[in-house]
Image (cartoon, rainbow over all chains, first blue to last red; front, side, top):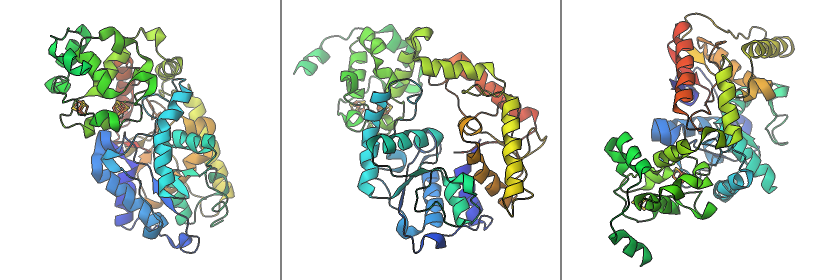
Length: 167
Length: 243
Ligand code: SF4
Ligand code: SF4
């Protein structure tokens, strides 16, 4: 059993995945990142949270990453886990997620990176339903964007500011 | 005052709580609570349905089995384990929640979770969205062909399904092949760039497992075993999660 997040970090360190943040130098788009409970607190702990930050910083630039607080193993669950997205308790799910939404708002970041499917669905819903409309993206999107190999149809979750970068 | 007084009374025993204590290592520390409230203050589910983790545990300690079994709050706690992390005594409240979920008659558990688990059981790929292995293969091949034809530099992009002996068995959340297949492509490109030796499988390919959230141990185990067997049958070394 392995997480792709650890592999991304390893491949970047080994030079196999030559990402960089040049694309964001002038744009200055800021990002925060969600620590998925399933990945961090419930399985691989803080070391994988560090790997996650290493990947994010490498891809978007150190100065464009803003961490949430609390974070890593102490992070709040977004409310997408435990079957919440399927259970039909929609209002409760959004109420649960309001803590996460506030946490993201406090970072002031333009984007939230959600490297887990449940987190992505939940935070995307929180963003849209609240009217905040901050984009919520997968890590693979940004890695490919940084490497100049993100196709036109692979930009569904990017905001208007990044829709055409590197095309 | 009311709470302190209640503690002095010999607590009633709840059969459910006793059973959970027997199942968990160190009894889940369920009787170690200091009532400090660290769990409740950092729980996003605090306050919903008039419940919070400390109150839930208190009710359990007082033998109020019916109260903890019947509250819909057990479906609002995501079993995220933040409370365990925050608790000075590592009291395992989410495990208690899990067993309360399990005490609900199966057909009364939330339909969406039940349906996702049933679908996973009924498809060889264990897709909670009910996607068949044929559809999965079709979508993957279709998307791959289009990328090769339309994206310069990706003419040789490779994706294999059921390739014997690959190092990584990559799973895939059903959401992508079913609703947004283009989202699979960036990961393929990354794996190709680094030269990873990977394959999808037509059996056990779906990443998700809602049977766990349904608290159906037997179904959960069936799904996990099917996936583990799929990895072994292909002679792959590592089950690789996309997250
Ligand atoms: S954090 Fe632990 S000790 Fe404190 S009230 Fe909650 S369960 Fe009890
Ligand atoms: S596991 Fe449940 S009770 Fe504990 S913090 Fe998470 S949602 Fe709250």
